[in-house]
Amino acid sequence: MSETFTEALRAWFAGRGLDPDSEALAGTPDRMLRALEEFTAGYAQDAGALLGRTFDVDHPGQPIAVTGVEFTSVCEHHLLPFTGTADIAYLPSPGARVAGLSKLPRVLDVYARRLQTQEQLTKQITDVLDKHLDTLGSACVIRSEHGCLAHRGARKPGAVMVTASFTGVYLSDREERADLFDIIGTPSRGARRGW
Image (tube, rainbow, N blue to C red):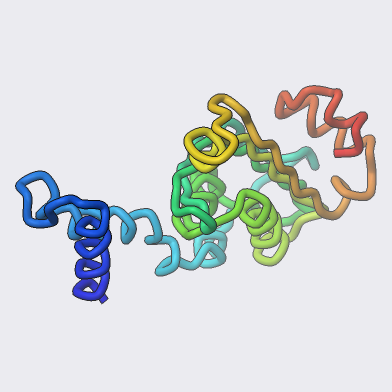
C-alpha cells in the first residue's frame, strides 16, 4: 500500500510541475502516510472494550459528564482536519456500575482517530455508551471548526459546527435534558430549540 501511495503522490507533484525528488518533497509521501496512519489509528481500537471495566459506586442518580474534551479528527470527504471539543454525559441506571473518568475521553479518541463526519462521530459516542453501560440515557455535544469549511470552498474560518446526539431520557424528556445542560454548561437556548 505504501508504495502505491508514494507513487501516486509523486505523480501528483509532477503533474503540478513540482520535482518529487527535491529536498523538500522527497520524503513527503512517507511523512504524509505516517500522519494518515496516526490520524486513523482508531480503526485498530475497540471503544467498547474501554467501557468493559466499570466500578461499583454509591451514585446519587445524577448525570456523569466530562466537558470540554479536545479532539482532532479528519473529514472523510476532504481528508482535512477538524478540531474542537466534546461534552459527553450519561445517566446511569439505578445501581448501575460506572466507567472510570478517563474512559469517556478515550472513547472519543477512538472514534475521532478515524475518517469521520462530525454528525457520525457524535452519534457513535452515545451509541457505544448505551451499548456497553447500563444507562437511562446518554448525550454528546460536539463543537468544532472544519478545515474543509475554513480553508477551501466557502472559506469561512472561525465558523463552528455544533452537533448533538441524545438518547433515552435525554431524548424523550426535555426537563432531564435541561437539567443536563445546567450541569454541563450548554446554553439554555439549546434546550429551548429542542436539543
